[in-house]
Structures are given as C-alpha cells and as structure tokens.
Amino acid sequence: MRKVTIVGAGHTGATTAHFLAERELADIVLVDIIEGMPQGKALDLTEAMPVIGSDVLVVGTNDYGATSSSDIVVITAGLPRKPGMSRDDLIEANTAIMRAAVSASLQESPEAILIALTNPLDAMAYLAMKEAGLPRARVIGQAGILDSARMRAFVAMELEVSVQNVHCYVLGGHGDDMVPLTRHSNVAGVPLEDMLGKERLEAIVQRTRKGGGEIVGLLKTGSAYYAPAAALAQMVEAILLNRHLVVPASVYLEGEYGQTGIFFGVPAQLGAGGLEKVIEYDLNDSEQAALKASADHVRETIGALKLEVPA
Ligand code: APR
Image (cartoon, rainbow, N blue to C red; front, side, top):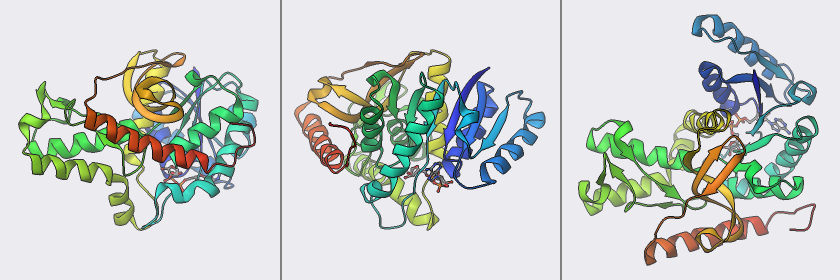
C-alpha cells in the first residue's frame, strides 16, 4: 500500500482523509498538534471502513514518526479565515505552522511530494519549496481545481446541465483577483460565452472570485472544506495513479506565462513524479493583463514572507 500523510486533521484534513479512504488508494496518516483529535478521527474513519468496504489503514498521531516513508504529504495545517479576513491576513501565523510541518514531514519522508493547501496558498507553497530546497516538481499548491469547481458548479446551476459537462479554467493567484478564463470555458464543447449573456457570465465570474469568502461569511467560524478536500483528493489520485492529469494548480513558474520565481495557478500536468509540465494557453491582451495583475499581487505576498533561506 502507498502512504499519504495529511498534516492538519481539522476540517479540510479530515475530509480529505475521508475522500481518500473511500478511493482505497493509500494508507493514510493524520497528524495534528491537538492531542487525541487525530487519533479519534482516524479511529472513527477506521470504523467506517467495513461499511464502505475499503481496506486502507487510517492512523492518527501527534508524532511524525508514524508518517515515515510517505509518498505524498498534504499540508492543511494552519488557521482558517474569519469573516472579513483576506487570505493574505493569515500569512504570519501560517508561515510558522507551514515551516514546522514541512520540515518535520521531510525528515521522515525525504522523497515525498508535497501538496500545500494552507493559505495564503501561493506564498505558503513558495515557502515550502524554497526552505526545503526541493525541485519544483515536488511542491504543488491546491487552489485552481477548487476555484474552477466553484465556477463549474455555478454554471451548472445556472444552465441546469450536468457538472460533468461544464469545463471551466480559473488561473492566477488564489485571491479575489484570480482569473476565470471565460473564453476557454465551455459546456460540452460549446463556448461558455455563447451560452450565457454578458451580465450572467460576469455575475458568475464575480461569485467565483469571492467563492471562498461567501462560504466564510455563511459559516461564521472556519472556511470551506468539502470542495477543497475533494480537490486535494483528486490531486493525490492523479499522482498515485500516474494519470498525467491536467488540472489548474499552483506551481513554481520558470518563464511560463511570462512569470518567473512565483507560485501561480496554471494548467499543470500531474503524474507519478508530481508536476510533469505546465500547459500554456494562448491568451489575448485582456487575459494577459488580468493574469499580470494577479501575479503582481502574489509577488507582493511572497515578498512579505520572512524566509529563513535566501530567496
Ligand atoms: N502541525 C499540525 N497541525 C497543526 C499545526 C501544526 N503546527 N498548527 C495547527 N494545526 C492544525 C490545527 O490544530 C487544526 O486542527 O491544523 C488544523 C486546521 O484545521 P481547521 O482549523 O479545521 O482549518 P481548515 O478549514 O482545515 O483549513 C486549514 O486550509 O483553506 C486553508 O486557510 C485555510 O490555512 C487554512 C487551512
């Protein structure tokens, strides 16, 4: 059995464990700093396995020893947003948490591929890669599958079609200036721009951009976790099954889309080694300008990181 560690057994971490256990892809280790909580959730999930019919092991722990030789480490540890907060407001608290999680995980699993979820996502993924000195293939941030899934859900609701027919591509940083590419999005091959009037489309774009905040506002405590966890599970599966699956994800750019030295949401092909390649779309001037504005914002957030190694 392959092994996946999930650091942070809170809402997103535990839900990711649930999705993964159902797929019977790997044994799962849930790590958290709260005593008893990861153990309790892992035991509860283990007791669900006979009903689900999955033979994976699920272990909960406060000690990284149990995570050794993991193929993938998913990092969800961190503080979630409160109403009115932006993702960038989390940077200070989550930098320390991310740093500790990356270093302890790699000590036990030096070959692991890291998938980051902790916000502010693009900056946290950057911190993980730079401080651990990892090649870019081994650090991938989850954001784009989620942002695109939100847009897909809104389009499917609006047009009353199956979510499976709706293909949307949201690129850029994981913030309110993310870039939903309406020109590349389609419903069963028909361009989205031909199916929805300008106003309806713009409303969906805006709701997508603020999709995370909408959930934070409704929940009052904590942020979204079902859709983020589903996105994480899809990324883990793509890597473990060597699918060569192209998904929107935050990866370290080396010249693609005219950007170098930042993590940024782009179409990324995932397989056994992690990031296999970045797919470059043909973009018009306004799409390029929107991506540049988003990249400038990500660069600024990354600049606010207090790295322990030279950038
Ligand atoms: N090591 C391990 N776990 C930690 C650490 C640490 N150093 N610090 C905090 N945690 C744990 C918390 O104890 C908590 O159980 O991380 C978990 C986070 O879970 P939730 O509070 O439920 O938050 P969640 O909704 O899962 O979001 C986690 O994802 O979307 C982002 O912005 C969000 O950064 C946040 C992360």
